[in-house]
Amino acid sequence: MKVYLEMKRRGYEVYVGKLYKTEIDFVNKKKDERIYIQVSDHITNDRTFMREVSTVLDILDTYYKVLIIGTRYETFQYEGVQIIDIFC
Image (cartoon, rainbow, N blue to C red):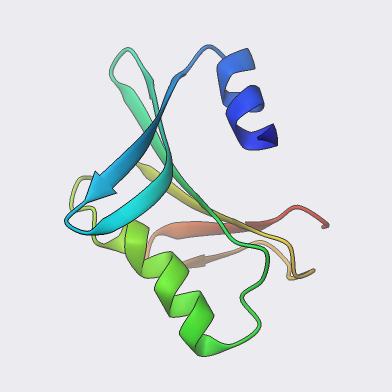
């Protein structure tokens, strides 16, 4: 809910996206800008991480892609996806 409210506050139209059979948590649009955001409580094992990040990696356009997590990792990038921890 916080992600939704923050994106609305910043002036984005916010949608839930679907790509094939996977759901993208937030597709945010403002004019010609688009931001894809996936949210996960934790990515403490490789299987969970790959499941969450693959959702946005499967999007073939070049817009900004983010995975927001809550596991106390430093911010990093994985194949062009920004991984941001809400606790750091």
